[in-house]
Length: 334
Image (tube, rainbow, N blue to C red):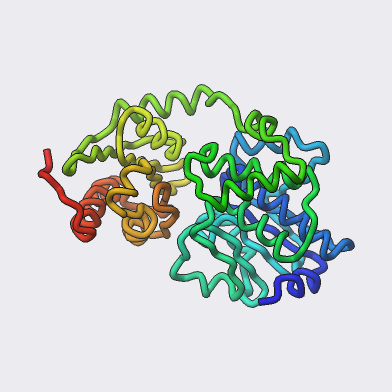
C-alpha cells in the first residue's frame, strides 16, 4: 500500500474516530489531518465522530487553532480513514452508515484486529504493539519524511500520554518517540496538564455505585470483580483497580438499550497470566451481547444490544478458562 499516493489522490478526505472519542482518538485525527494537508495542501478534510469525551473537549478547547469535529457528514468523500478503532460498532449507529466502500477505506489502529475487518476496509495499518494510535501516526510522518510542527507534536504526545497512563504502559519505542516529539517542540508539562481534570459529579457517583454493587470472585491469587453501572463503565473499572482488584469488568445499559461492557486489568495480571482481555474475553462477549468486542490485553470492551447480566457472569468464566489454557497455576478458588 502506497499511503502517500492514496492520500494525495483524495481531494475530500473523511477522518472518523470512535464514539466518545478519547484524547488518543481525537489527537490522532487532528494529527492525521495535518499530515494529509502536507501531502495535499488544497485538500478538504472533514473530521467526524459521534461524540467526544469530556477530557477530549478540554484538550480541544486548548488548541490555538480550533478544528471542527462534526457528529456526521452529508458530503461526498473519496476516501475514509478510520482511526483508533477497526470496529464498525464502535462508531455509533449513525456514523457507521458513512462506511460504504472498503476499497476507499483505510484503518489506522493499535487494537486487536476485528475478524470482520475485510468488510470495513481494504487498506489497514494496524500495529498492536504500538501503545497508542498517535504513536502510529508519528511513524507515518517519519515514513513519509514529513516534518512535525510543534502543534502536531503536542497533539501526538497528548494522545500517547493518555493511552499509556503517563507512560506506565510503555515500551522502548514509545519512550523514544516521546523524546522525539519533545525535540520537535512538544511541551511535556503542558501536555500532562491538558489531561488533568477532576471527574464530574455524575462520574464520581458512578464509580461509588460500582464499588457498592460489585461481585467479587477470586481465582487463585487473583481478585476478579464485576459490577453494573448506568454510565462511565471504563472509569468504574479504573476505580475498582485502584481499590485493589486485579481485573474489573463493568456492564451498562444506555437509555437507547445499548449494552456496553468495559474491562481493565493490572499490568501484573497480564504479565503473569498472559490473559488478554481483548481476545480472550471481549471478543467472545461481543457475540453474546449481539455486537462486537475487542481491545487490548489490559483494556478492552464490547458493545451490543442484549444479555448484559449474562455477559458479566460469562466474563469471569472466560478469564478462568484463559488462565487454565495458559497453564498458570491456580491454587484454588475461594
